[in-house]
Image (cartoon, rainbow, N blue to C red; front, side, top):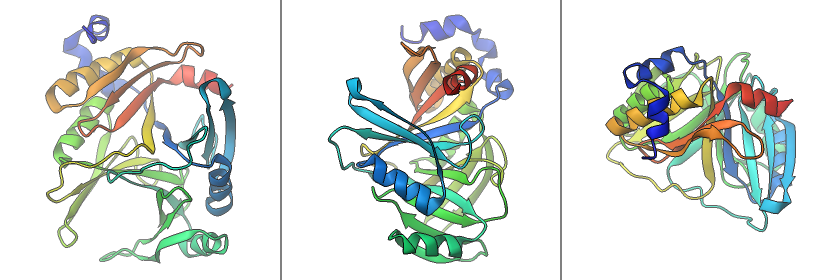
Length: 291
């Protein structure tokens, strides 16, 4: 059976306790872009991100670039992938946005506008609240929410995905990924509910924002957004947890735990109940990759 390796590695009676002990953090989000240099230029000049590394893999006909607000060893980053000859992707209806925290959203938006960026929501307080936000669109159509807040160690602060059953998704990410439910907010006027989930408080780290739109149970995934990667201290134990939780709530392991040929970094990957992909990466192996 596909999961026999996992089940043999970890006694099933202890399997769910592992996520409580494991130290995890968001590593990167992977998505596809039609022009790598154009996107790098936009993110560095408009958002203030740094290009951390770039690599070309001609034998597999793709290039990628890692960008963020700090080193990969300690910060969440985006991993942009360019596939040779493909200049356009379908983002679908399920992916929502990324978010960037800024001390002055008004100033940030003016800078983006001056460089030709597309502003889809002018800066101002959220309806019924005081937090100042804005929305901008990158050259490939990915949406970025800009959120005004004080100094933060992690400016790249959200990944928003739409889900068909919020309670099920909350349980899945709590049980399978060890995330904490930080808060929920229901907005009946606009017919949606959100849940913020992560490994530390919102203002200190990256969080997953799950959005449920009343009555909508399915979304298209498109072929643009790929996955989010999360660190773990043991991919085998972590996969065993996912395997067990998926039997209860849905989802499935798509890559059994083990080393990637060539670089030997141990990973496992799975789909959540809505089909969103998550990759769990051995933390020690990941740090060795960065050396």
